[in-house]
Length: 109
Length: 115
Image 1 (cartoon, rainbow over the protein chains, first blue to last red):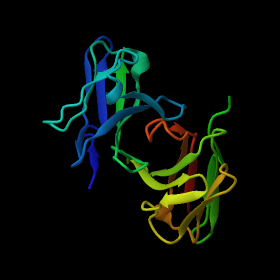
Image 2 (spheres, rainbow over the protein chains, first blue to last red; image 1 turned 45 degrees about the horizontal axis):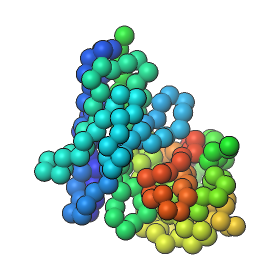
Image 3 (cartoon, rainbow over the protein chains, first blue to last red; image 1 turned 180 degrees about the vertical axis):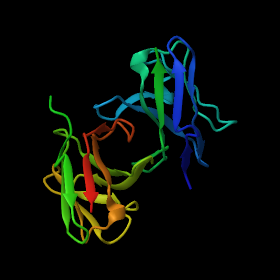
């Protein structure tokens, strides 16, 4: 069965420090992975997807098939990055996303 | 333009009562999804609509849960004989055909509390 694991429920770092939110997946096929973000009092929204190999708001994520990971990274955290982050896996041939349990990121001033 | 809307935003109901949750997707979006988010947990897929058909209902937790979609637009999630474990935030999302499941636009959610 497909599974997404985000081992940290809470993560707190200081402004300006590097941040890494961990995501590991379990899937026998070719994965498509995404990061969604929910800022306070806002809706869940797409942050980035591995297939685009893009950087959004300074965040990047690299798919590592050997380690079955898709960690989200940012070299210098900003206070506005405080939010709930969800890693999600798209299952080939199925129109649904499998979400991890989420990591609440807090950036301290 | 308008995003995905859901109503009500909050619903408190007594155990054993039926509830209906509504989702209005973005106009023109053919695919619609329902998710459940229990406190402290991730998003749990419930059901997916393509047009008015539901090709994947695999996430519905029991036969007390049902959903329908009409006019390739509004969807209603119905929970019969609610139980306390049904308390959660119910999220709806929509996407247009051809963009894949990852282009999902989420509504604000309905917070359901069963007392």
